[in-house]
Length: 240
Image (cartoon, rainbow, N blue to C red):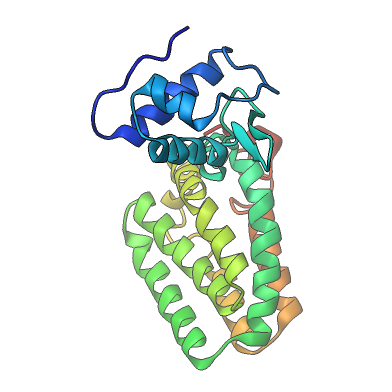
């Protein structure tokens, strides 16, 4: 199947798309060595530098791999799914399991590493969560996540902070949906206030295990004991 010349601008994107079609369509199976840059450039009607950039993009997508002295080989016919895409497909319960691992350890570290500025940020976030008790579910969830983010930030571990940031969008959407379904805040607008206040105190006072235990208990049963819509309950598994 001839590749066909591409039209001007943006050449790299067009060349990448054409080469990707050949790979995903099965024209070049896994293990195939691609034609050389000169050949590809001639077929696509572009310069070798454009082909080089296109191949770099395909390598980044996990479709091809250059082998020194041997050429560029097809290693997959489907692009590698990136982390944000996998998170978007994740169930709330799966995200909660990761959240548990990240946040409980972060709370423990935060109690050891918090600075005066961190303590101020925690109290500000707690006040913001309380103020949001009169707002809608989305605003309340945002304020709740802001408090948890302040705890993670106080751990002063950039990897933990990045992990938390990555799964926050999926977590937020899942919590907003669950609150809407359960109507939990109708009876208790500032649901979980006592536990969150205790968490802030434990971090401020340097009680690492207490902070970890408080956060673990809150994440294990965020909707109250045995609530059927909570992520910890078998019926609470919600696909995003």
